[in-house]
Image 1 (tube, rainbow, N blue to C red):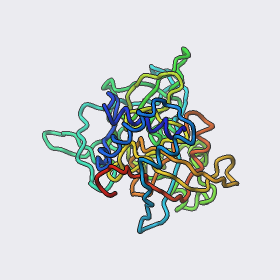
Image 2: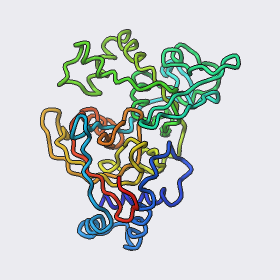
Image 3: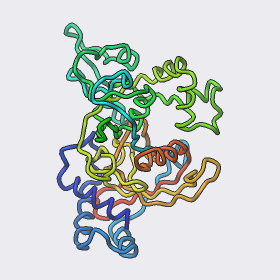
Image 4: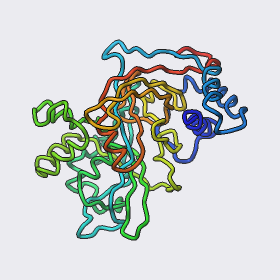
Length: 344
């Protein structure tokens, strides 16, 4: 039933894209998905029984196993929406700026086979690469009024940028929601992989918590490590409605345990994908079966390939701890609309 409700949320975006929307996805399955959405609405309820929801997916979709030629069966990571303390103005405590999208950022066309795209700026009439993380941290954007919030720790901003959204708890008790609004055009460099390659963290200990500990225990080395990821993400403030999840690139709130980020150059937002894997959901030391029908509603610069997905786990430290442990193989089955009119 939860998968059906999450699919219905995507149907709204497929019918009429909302105002808050990210980079578009491959349109190949759009006609078929819209047919399936019509059938879903014809049920007359957003909360059918589990049996009816299963019959709906079986009647309107056919399964196609995704078997990549390289690194089969597929690879999963997790993400979440961080919640951190912050301030709308700079203070003695909150000194790390969160920047909105600069008006001189000129995106270039992304490569056809990935989510990554470049970005440039004009300098004396010539297009040059946009500022990288180090240049921005050293003040390249200072004084332009782009600050939309201030944080206490650089590592909080770093993980916000990896996740693509955040909830900022302000001193007056209000919560500011920030969402992805572009990046500086540099490819994402996984700093966890660098720590493993250099023998600084054992592979079997790698997680977001372990990366954070390394950065906090040696701030100078941590700052240098973060700068090796030259990618820098910009944010925008968006409305925070109750317990609604972070906004995905499709423009709808994400559902914990049902929404995934995919390679938008290959997959279509709104497509159901069944994920089968054994994951460390409860503790880092024990694997548990994960067999879930997920809905593609988001994307990310590190999510590249047909059998590659980021699983959304929710907001806060608890979901963050689970998300940080996920780096595991998984099997992918794409549900293709029976009236798609095209093969995947």
